[in-house]
Length: 291
Image (tube, rainbow, N blue to C red; front, side, top):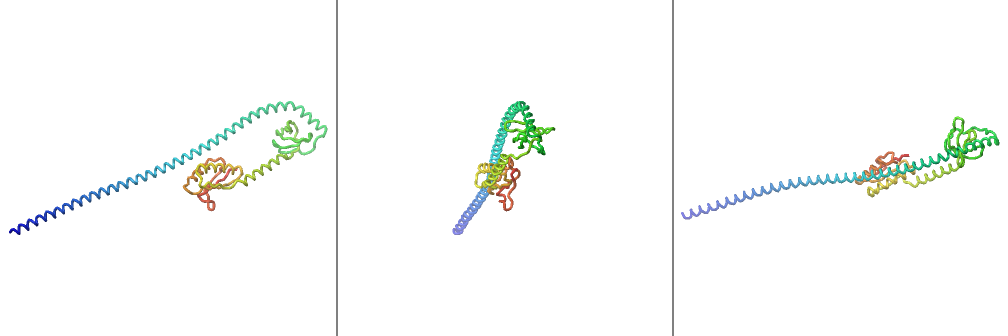
C-alpha cells in the first residue's frame, strides 16, 4: 500500500511538470508570434517610409533641375535682352548724330546751292558755247550715287538728285554741286567703287574660308557652350554661311536644351533641327543662318 501511494504521488508530480512545460511552450509560442507580427509591421512601415522618401527625393531632384534650367533660361534671356537693348541704343545714338549732321549739312548745302546757282548756269552756257551741243543718247535709269561725266566740263561727278520733268538734276563734282541737264551727262564706272567691291568680296571670301561650318562644344559647361555658340553664329552670319552644325553630344541633354533655347531667340537663326542620319543624330543640331 505504501508503494502504491508513492507511485500515485510520483505520477501526480510528473503530470504537474508536463503541464508546466506545455504552458511554457504555449506562452513562448504566443510571445514569438507577437514579436513576429510586430517585426512584420515595422518592416512594412519601414518600406513604406523608404518609398515615400525615395519619391520625395525624386521630386526634389526634379524641382531642382527645373529651377536650374529656369535660372539658366532666365540668365540667357537677360543677356540676350541686354544685348538687344545695347544694339538699339547704339542705333538710336547713331541716328541722332546722323540727323543732327544731316540738318546742319542741309543748311550749309542750301546756302552753297543758292550762291552757286548763277555760277552753274553760267558754266553750262559757257560749255555749250565752247563745245557746242553734245549729240549722244542720255543715260537711262539714273540712280542717286551713280558716277557720271559732265561732258561740257569734262569732269566726273556723282548724281545727287534724280532728273526732273525737264531732265535737269544735280551732280556733285568735288565740293561743288552742279545743276546740269541729263543730255550733258555720260554714265561712267567709278573705279574706286569697283575696287572697293572687289576688296569687300575678297574680305568676305577670306572670312568664309576661315569660319568652319561646324562648332563642337562637347565637354563644356552650359555657360561656356552658350557663349561660344553665340559668337560662332555671329561669325557664320558675317561669313555668309547658310547652314552650320552645332555638336553638343547626347549626354544628359542639358547642353542640347540650353542651346535650343539660345537658337529660338537668336537674331541670325532662320531655323534649326535635330541632326539626321550621317549628321550626328540627336548629338548635333543643324542650324540654317539668315542671309
